[in-house]
Image 1 (tube, rainbow, N blue to C red):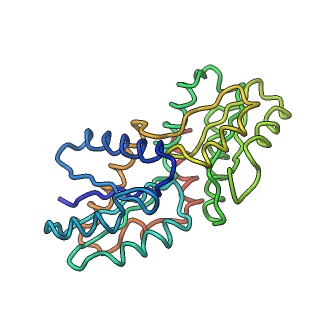
Image 2: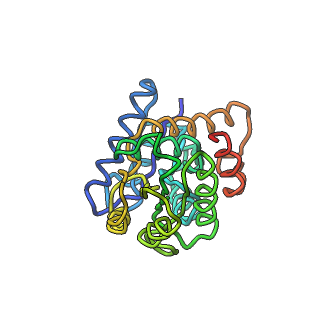
Length: 264
């Protein structure tokens, strides 16, 4: 059985690593027989390279590297492949797809909104800000915009994307736009996995909102999605193909429309 290596970005904020570890523990509880390791690209230990070296020294041969990322931006396209290319010889590493877009992430977002005080009965009168970290990658920005458009069709009064960095609008501007549209309530749903500098900026921008949800974190749906991405790679390998899940991926904006329509 391939070892699952969850690759997180890392942060100086200790809440980030704590949240990643809590998510990984939930993944382990879903698949007790699967070995799951965690590696960080920066700031935290163990590093991805360090984990790979340890696995190789133990005689492990097959690894599924799963980026703990919501979109295919720079880290997924450049940083992680570069680290994996430098892995010790003898390891067969298959890079899984990033987590988003997925109906499971929308379910996790709604879980967090309901935990923050909303109810399903509030949907038609509530505008939601889908607040992401932001990126300079146009593909990643297009995905967030597509998710917001499609999520609107599941019953919310309106959904607007916002970004904590690199792109506009900011969270506070999207909140004001939803107010101007006449939404009775405005909620901010952070489309981020763990706390840190940019999620804190999202929270500051949500001061005029009625509801601020928590980050996705160790939501059950996120853990289930990690297992889904792992199984996709294992299934590809079982069919004898050399393609990785990332190689086989559709353009993400098209994938967003296809997947999210299943939730409408």
